[in-house]
Picture (cartoon, rainbow, N blue to C red):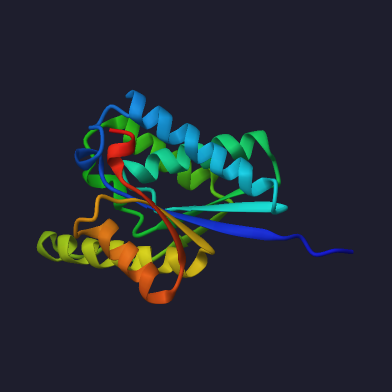
Length: 183
């Protein structure tokens, strides 16, 4: 019996305020999702299994998760979803209930989950510092799990910039697209 080939695709991207805003039904987001779905399809032509890794953040990660989940429905058993969760409290600070609900849906529908920390039992002043730490640890863990990184990055510093720098440092194959392509 032949071993199945697989590829692990990670993604990093900016939050909505650096992309097309918080309306994820805007045309730029729809175009981004369509391109990500096409990228998954192209990898399915080469590999038996595509495992998409998402950090579940608002913005680019959300669109990536939507693409993975749609392709998972379209290609059962061939597209799998790995939720890379910085901490289970990740969505607590979000404002829109639909975003919070989708975060929980992603966790529920994931084939694999990695959780990198917890804010439970910490004071409010500690939580913000710990959240930033866990987000960075999540990025590194996700990239360590990935074969390829897709980056929606404008070249600025921050979480996405840190992920791209880590990928470069570790020699991870990275495909970067500037958000201006979509927004």
